[in-house]
Image 1 (spheres, one colour):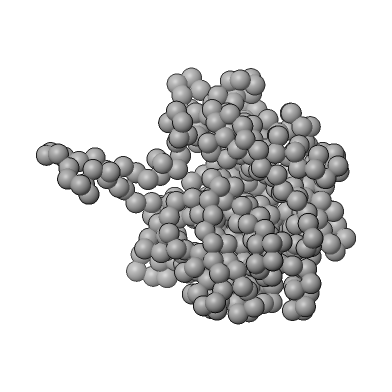
Image 2: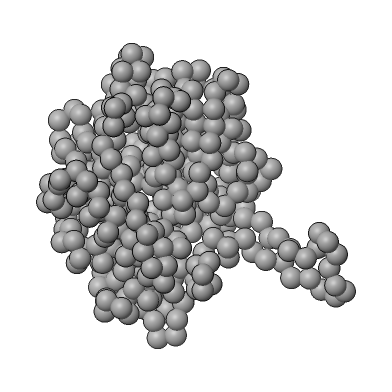
Length: 395
């Protein structure tokens, strides 16, 4: 890279459980809340940002298809600024960071906001038949969440691809539930310590006739036990191993981070803290899309002549526990330096925001531990894997 791309700031909303506290807030409003909080955290004004890149898998509400531009103008960015919406399945938030970097490297931007949101609780129902005249009789409405959660090639639910992964590599239900329990316990500890609170900008939500301040993630179940996890029934395949307990949560939320040219960022008096070193994207068989982080991480490390052991901290999205077991066993990545503060199983997984949440977590961890390198990685529906490398400039 000719430009040195740096990261600064970084804030998110609390993540809301499906159909609960955030269901009445328009998706772009979640994005506006996180983007404004990110600017405040970085000590920047909206007028200093020339580009906003927004990751989003499932457009919702009137602003849905224009959400990046709507967020940009509503937080005070200039009309002359640019906006881009991106979608790379579960890596959409991460892709927003990469796309912002690409705009800067190519000379089209200097300072960008990168992030994203989902509000799956507001996913619409649609009909493919009504516009041009439906046949007589009742008409079926299709849940657009079904579009987001099915493999487009064989129409398997994403959980079924996790079953395929577990079957192909013989990952067992017990070890998947053990990972899930660990994720919940780690999220609970991160809540108690205030680690997660430092990333979150509380948001006002409606509670009946009243308004309350939502300060924490709504999905974590830190008190759950192995006994309760093992009583949960498989939901994707009879006799299967994938349950609601060892799968990521369906949640709503938004997250943003500043991505900029180092000279431009420091010229505005901002200490960037972290460098975006490189990234990698790979294709994998869609039926076992959960293998994605393994070749993506390997490709990324090879590009930088690094080894797995050179990385101080990993955030690997817990789409399903089988995904993390696969990365652990195939690459030898220790769980002692992976997802130390919970993950998709405990915090939840809104795809437009997840990669940014994970990046912010990695940044906080590296800053507090004086580690050098962090890798953020995830599998992507339809068969891809993605990985990003960041470096702590403050160590």
